[in-house]
Image (cartoon, rainbow, N blue to C red; front, side, top):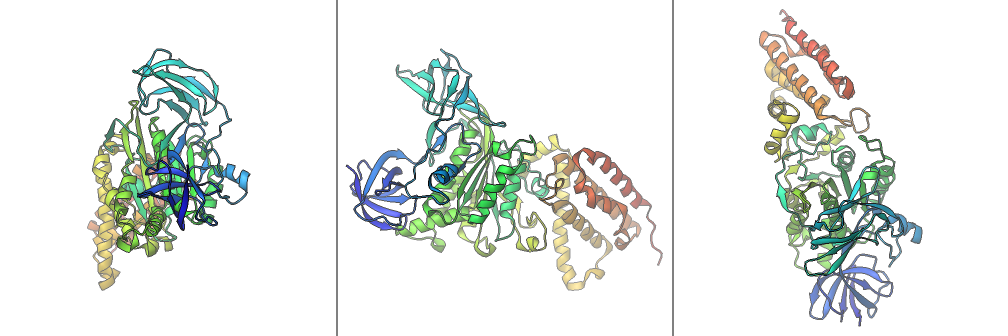
Length: 584
């Protein structure tokens, strides 16, 4: 017996008489069979959040309970796919219904006819545990898909097959302790709101190398860490996430476009498939999953898209991969929560957001981490969430609740963006709480003096801000020469190091080795200028020196030539020591 629709309020539907109704059960709503999820039970009534357009629904139409929770299908074929917020493949939907998603369309998330060659890694008689790897499939040219024993299943392998199989075929049969036989298929389902279990969480001791100098040098994020990127419209949030997707040393990228403008998502969907992975030369989509939920799609599916993305990321983490999850933007996700909360007539919190906003944000970011997975391998999910505060005001609830749980804050500044300084991360307002934990890695893998150089750079930038306040009162000419020198070096750091072009083939990515050499050159310039000033050389006489011009061009020098170029700079800097003091 099915229930019937009693009341409709936008995407929220009240149904009476739904059989075996449980929280978070997926239901089919109306004669069109729209996908919905039970989010509240009130006596005999079930409050359903519908993930599709409810236009045309009428009271009295049927509501069927599927008795399953909102889940994603996990298996080979995820990589390279483009899904909507509830894991419906957009390319298959277009082939079936045209440019717009028709109501009630029901498409399998993964190709059920495609055959994958399964190579077993376990054999008959082996004892296997939940999360253990029993075989592999070459999913793409870059990703080797590990077939895992589903969570909750331990036992002995009765049969295992070597064959070309579809995702619905059985790859192994496992005999449990009670004598029952469980079939393991090439794919498995997992409820999106439940984190996948792990053995233990590990400390964040390895940085996510992004190739973006302002991030890697001043505000690094750890593998398995969390970062927030708040900024007003046009400040470069999406470009930063594109750069991280392309250049970070994560093995898999999950990009969730949550409630963004249609033209912006179109650009992502059209450019990503054409991009090359810079490290391997293969297509970038061979290690990317895209989830697109534009601002004109049903608002409820926007709320689900974040969970869909993090569950897929956890699945590949459990194989031992490092995964970077980009959520753009969590503000639109919070707006979906606010709209649904309003339709449920819940008591509003600050600015109309639900009172549980902080808990939901924390639950999402807490699913990130570097962990030992059930198979004993090490995997990580790094969560980087863009926030779009109205007018760039980070005192609003979404930004504040995000900053409370994330450990890196990249503050995007509209004034820097307007001055064409990109990435427009404000070095005075941003911070990273991973610095102390990552310093050992930097000392062992980059340079023993890296932490001291990084602190010296930050000190110069902060000193510059203090001196600029004085300049506004007394003017530049009234400053002593040593303070003029500080402003001079700070300008070199800002314009020749922190500023980076995403569209220049060389400057778009800087290795840690090159970053180290660039910073050492700047610090050597700083010491040489300070020594010259002590001897009486004027800062104005050092404006056009050769060393400065060489440092300005250093970001455009190819990685293979950087050592030779660095030696040339050292020679140019040594000439500062022989500069003569101008006679009055």
